[in-house]
Image (cartoon, rainbow, N blue to C red; front, side, top):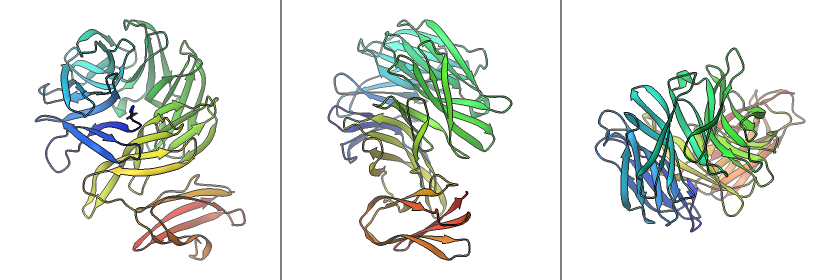
Length: 439
């Protein structure tokens, strides 16, 4: 996702093949309030997936991802250039050294494009792909990088650096091989200047990359995920100097958290998203977190600064029907500068907005915790806290509320250590969450 020159946003993703059919690349243009202006799909007879988009100098858009429609039994990189209305101007495919896929794209200072992803000659043996094209999408050069730890690596994210070269964050393609994060710095021709490998602490930690950004001091910030048990993960930040040497590393999360996308804030700190939203100071010390996931789960895939000094997050949120889980919706969260949520929107075709009671955070807590919920319709609402015996101990809300996002803080300093239940009721909707007070 990216904010566009008119103050709105452009989003790329993929339609679902749930229930039959094949996936297509989905391009969505929304206005500054999150309302859809138009959407376009791109695809042929097989799965076609969109992974990255950027507005170009001519106010059109460049999209990349992978296509099976033009690559036979294996994927190839698909590059699509559109005009300002999302209508196709040209497309290009690239097969690397056999088959390939692209995860990230950026228009470069010369008007061309830099793309990273993976390529291989025999599935699933993959190497990092870096490809430079001109403004028409014609290849200028291609570089392939093979690491020393695994033959299953991909370029996850690429950005042009202030010296005209490129920084790539990469790592293993498949979860069973997630062991390290690999940072690659190249010159303007894609020739390697240096690489750095980041490993988890023995014996169990394993790392996976999300994205990378060059920071105001000329170094780099990497966001990703660290796992140390089959069902336990944390988000991780790695801050380096200009040579890729580690300055500090911090981990964040409770039980099951991860990091996908990061931005540096105006005060030199960082804001990143994945399982939740995290905000840190310039040294990586956690300032606050927010959790917008619903009862069925969701995640933030990309966070971007906006012209008003705030941020916008795009991701997906799952939904269900009477027969179980359905595909996820595109999910947008617009934030005012630093702390406040302005609006939450689901971009979907046939499912109305839902009531949502989010898990409180932090949890366990001492002595305060934050409880958030979403109302798709106005109505009479109660939000109450009960102890383990079912006795009401606090009423946070009891009255008429309009639709919107709500946030309340429960101060439990006079309560005993133990388990409590938070109960939201709005019309026929009733939902509870378990809160753990631990002193």
